[in-house]
Image 1 (tube, rainbow, N blue to C red):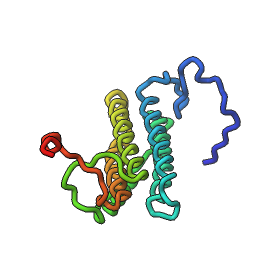
Image 2 (image 1 turned 30 degrees about the vertical axis):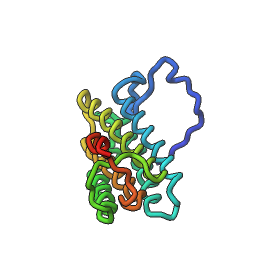
Image 3 (image 1 turned 90 degrees about the horizontal axis):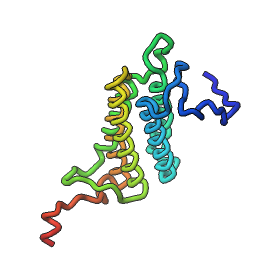
Length: 192
């Protein structure tokens, strides 16, 4: 598929509506557009995370792949169920399986968890934690949409696994968990 964008300013959304992939016009604050917007925000956070990862690292290649996958997921969301939908535009279970393998790959090298992990540490870890929380926001928006309209169930699975991925990736950037910032419960902080 070839994409060509000749105009950026179209004025088509000036009245608060936008077009979906099937040509339907919807309000820009509809549940579907909200979910797509959160997915776009997540992709932007992943782009920022990538700026903190050396290009030759395996994580950089995975993040590049994920940014493209997030765009694919947006294309999936952009096309409501109907006769004009092409099956090829739907996220498949294979994408979820691939992501699960990446989660396990990073997790195997990590120190066992003995406490909850606070967001932070190395800059790349902090950005990975932000990507994790933005993934959860996106997941909540897609769940809300799925309560109103049909949504590809693989999208929800992918978002659930994606937050796991960003969690283990953050730990990877914190020397596989050795330099994680860990939560100290209030009772233990008061003892000190």
